[in-house]
Image 1 (cartoon, rainbow, N blue to C red):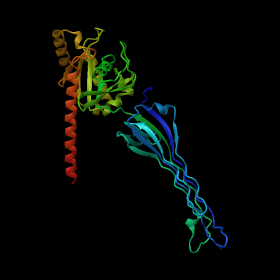
Image 2 (image 1 turned 180 degrees about the horizontal axis):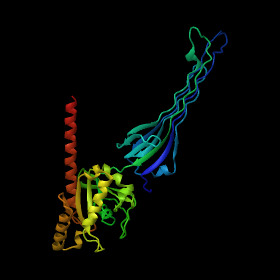
Image 3 (image 1 turned 120 degrees about the horizontal axis):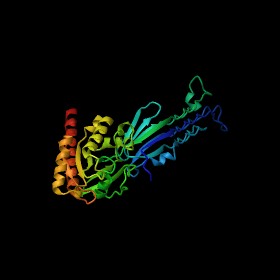
Image 4 (image 1 turned 45 degrees about the vertical axis):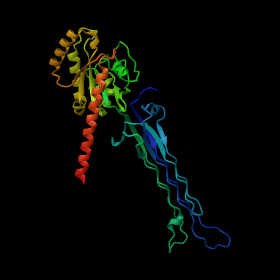
Length: 352
């Protein structure tokens, strides 16, 4: 199924049923009095996060979602049937906005998370409700209230532990193929990847993490150039960024240091928060160079870009160095989770 990360939909909650105007008409019962029942409530519209879906493509076809309205009340004080709620399934990681007000309604990050996006109408009151000591035969009823209608923007942000960034043809798709069971398209031309690909990397027993291959960025991506601007937002949820650099580009006029600086600048332009995320430098295609040449080029690259963080040399195609990379990532993620758990415990103790 084609990946779609944005969709606009209209949701309509059900209307409330009208109250009933009715009086008892039974043999041998004089002046039976009012017995009109209330109308049923209209159904509400809910969005439910499901881990089994990973795209908003279905919403390109179905754009309108309407819950069932409540039925009117009836005689003998019978309340109308309430309309069933409508559950609309969306992928985990979906952010919901109100188009008309730009309000952030919900951020659905957990499986099974459910949020009401349109409130059903209330049922009207039957004439029984208006009986009093001074009004024994009321003829007053109320209509049901209309259900809420909203125009929503759904925006999907991929949920992944690790995100891959780099220029087109840096080897991101090859790396995720090498480290996981994901099979993104790989070819010798730029922009082979047109949508994010997710892969689960298994490091050991009960040890795994999710890696996301993001379409290649180019200079000017933060302003809309190329394909990357559509997917930069997916990197905001990741815990760690792997910045891939092709150390042996086919075009000898391409400078790996210049490519690194261009991508780094786009991350800063798009979001300072994104630029401050933990980021590792991955030097790819190390198998194409001798040990001596690799050492020289690595030193020049690190000196030019002023890099002080972790560095890994890999060959995604030959699966060289990928096992060690996966193990290092797993250790890093486990340390981050332990630190987060300790911070939560400390915060809970402060609240007591």
